[in-house]
Amino acid sequence: METIIGFLLIPWVFISILTVVFLVQLALVENEYFGWTTTSFLIVITLLHLKYDLWGTIVDNPLYFFLYLAGYLAAGVGWSILKWYNQVKKTTRKLNKIKNKYIEDTRSDENLWEHLKRELSLYHVTNKETTNIAVKKWVKEQNDTRIIIAWISYWPISLVSTLINDPIRRLVIEIYHRINKIYDKILDHIIKTDVKDI
Image (cartoon, rainbow, N blue to C red; front, side, top):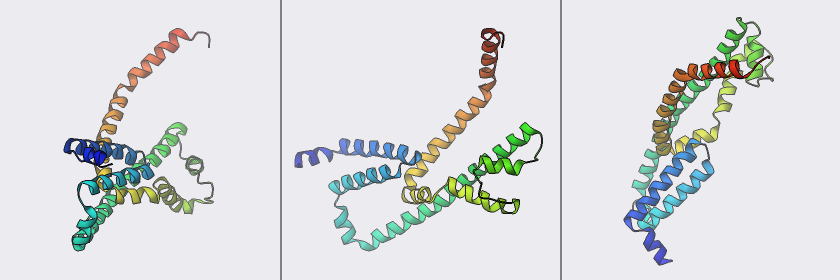
């Protein structure tokens, strides 16, 4: 057992393991596998405890530990507020997209309310006066409590994941929208030449 622990504590092995675990945590948080994120976080704590006496440090310096913990949680709460704001904006953009597509397709906003009820599964809503309440509930359901708790708990991982993933995703979506006409032309050409008498 000491040989294994000694091997794990070799600096390049230790740093390699922490790097791999961090990258895995990025993927886990981004894909909302919070149970596995917690497991990998506990692995990191265990590895750090093997290398450094974390428990002894906490017992010897409880004030610093609680100050660090308070700062960590405060930063997590701050990050969760920013992330919540962005998620609500993203969800309302989705709602507006549904609404605008309906109006574009029907060239009218008649029966829009009924369409939104079906699209958002808001069958329990009985009248238009409760629209805002229903939409708020729908937005909250799209971003449940466990996600917000994960943003607070794993904010450094969530922050890095967001900074890496969001710009890349936006770039890929922009590229897709710019070349979408090429895909349509290929589809039209193949349908026109290969599908006859339909």
